[in-house]
Image (cartoon, rainbow, N blue to C red; front, side, top):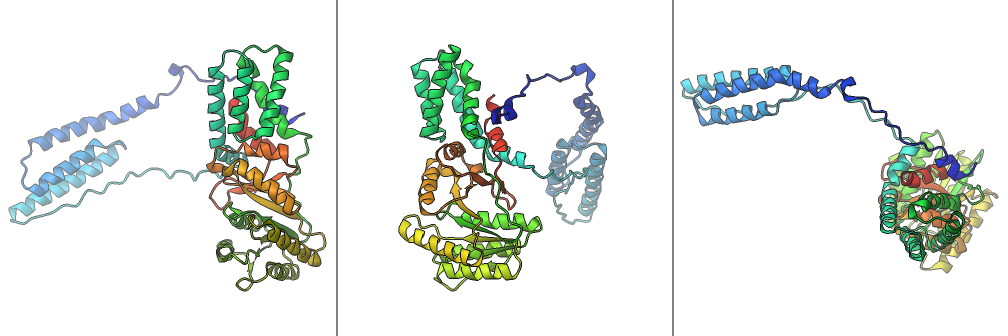
Length: 431
């Protein structure tokens, strides 16, 4: 069974399970019945208050205060009675003070509604996180697609040209947009489709099939029985160091022994940031002297990880893409040092990409793949963008799987990428 059938093949018509109103308990009726005595007594008290003489400016302020309080009573008779008892007690005190020629000032009546404790919200599932983080991408794409179908009454060449432009603007990439449009032209002739809505489901199916490809995703992290070495690369500002910190928290929570290496030694902010993450999630961070050779810091980290029986070692590196020759030499040297300690390492070389940059993220992936062999991608900041379609472009144009995805700003907003959850979160509301 293909990816599309697994995701959408068993969709059913929406069933109206609503019951007749006469068969349901009306909460509004209950609320009205409970509120009637409160409203009646409120009116009575209001009438009494209007008949009272204002004995002082302080008492006048108190009357206004209580009247306002009465107007907002919604929590039942018990709360109302408590407020009124407090009012009359203070009123008596005011009269007594006036008789003695004293001035009295009242503070606002402090009222608190006592209610049952609300249960803590259930923790999000991975599927919930995909739905939340892909909301901007999904709603933006859905809105454009719905507007597109509303503007066309028949399938013609203008229809296909506009569709191709829409797909490109949705950051699925020129290659994906062109291929999908050509496939739809063929499908329209084959099925003799005359109306745009006849092709709506086909469009979604084609998008899924582009990602499905040969059905081989290679999304799982290549964990080892002993030490797993993960090398992270990527330009500054894409969320690379933050992703490392969140992963350190995730793996430590799972019972793994984690260590970090700050190998971006020429940018002081990078070392300080990783040290702060280490402090925050309570994992050790290996650092070197200021402007130290990154490879030497990696060597120290590798030796410590082996000696201390670490499960996962994550190495943060520089991301100076503007000087590709130096970066390539640096990464090659780091790779040699890693292999000197653990010959089969690094087990993962992961490129961090900012999803909000759309096609620029695709360009970075292409450039870094020329510099160093990549085993996977870390897609960050997908919750704050409408450009999540770039994942389709990456899948189509590069043989590099997305392995990790950042869902948001919380410390646990990162997880292993799952193509089915991603495609469902991206497309399910379009069908």
